[in-house]
Length: 560
Picture 1: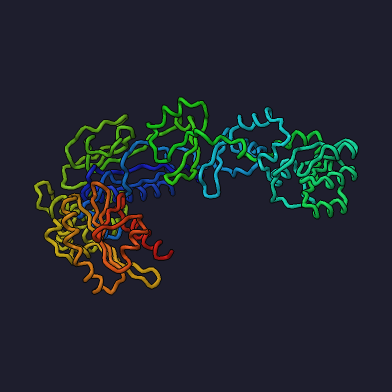
Picture 2: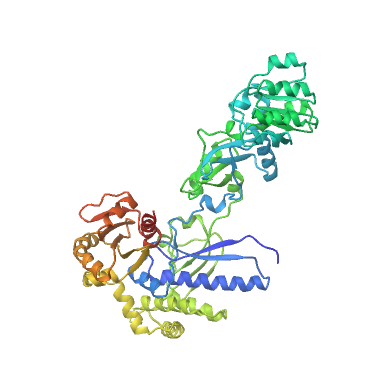
């Protein structure tokens, strides 16, 4: 079966997601992917990938469930609108500023692009070169010193004239002099050649020797004429490159300017550059106003990622979504009105979501969306894994308050019982653990707060621990800072660790306070996050993840 381009369909719950919203999205993605895989094997349809995303931050209860079943929560999607990264051409590779105009032209023809991005060794965008820039360089440049002005690499000259280096070093650059075509007698040649010149000449031994005596930097011998060992030896001794080419002097004279590096002609000022995470709605007008065809796209770290053109906008497909556990527009992920909704699975009353065409809607009067997802596994004869069973069971427990909610139905109880058997969990015990995890922090001891989400790490001979507490109540977190500070040192000593950190994460502001214990903790924290801790604490703006944002910095500092 021929390979087909992957298409992603996102599955999202509502804003401020609860356990049902998150777990049902994850389970449905698993189910849909297994059905799609089965259909591919039977060659019924092309490849579709379903991805669960979340429209908000996880609460404490849901975090506990993710940890209990050792799964990573869905990616946070702030806005559902189409982003540049969804449609741009990330296969349009960049080129080095040292390549020749001729090579750039060949590359453009090969990739069928009118513009190429030029990047440095680290991948940062330096400029753009277009077919117009190349045409301008060919038609408007008459300065015979331009090879030196542009610091043209010898390698470019060799490549452009399709030559062979007989003497000298190809890694050098033309740094002085002019281009000279030497066809006259030696007296005239000697009068016109200066030190550092690039000399185009034929098979005359005297002319070649004269160019060497005048200290030319490069001599290009045309028509494939032989070059004697003596000339090669003298050239090597005088640090002069000798290039042999099959082209005649006329052709070489025409080609020589095409060896210029693209960096000399590239456009580098006032570039219109887009971030890959930018939304298409925000950049469409800019693209339509500009006269250029292609626009460079960069990552959040300003590294080149690809090119986007107006054609990408014309061919653009909206993101596709399946909504679970809601069907109200104001509850949906931001920008949902700019997407294509393909399916809705819910257990609430019908709301205000509008679709552009008919979609599959499954709405049942049960206590939890996860109960419906469980039915879909059974109907499609797809085996439920232990992990998925745990997630679905947790969602039913949460939404029905362990069957105490008036919305609970016999079907919810039946589904939860079957799922608990598969997951190997005790319904009562698991429910208690979930509800405790989601309870108020004020009811927990210092030890419970520190160790409710705690991990140890080691780098070389240094051991350190990182605990994390998350809350939507910033005032509660501020009070917790002073409460926990005295406890950290005793906990560090008891655990025999060098350092101990506690992140107090405010979900709403997406910032974390950090308090710490250990002789080197303040110094490591200060250098790693460019912060100046005050009174044993610091505010880490934008840091919410221990795994991805905090621990890597600590590890990096300890390994430095």
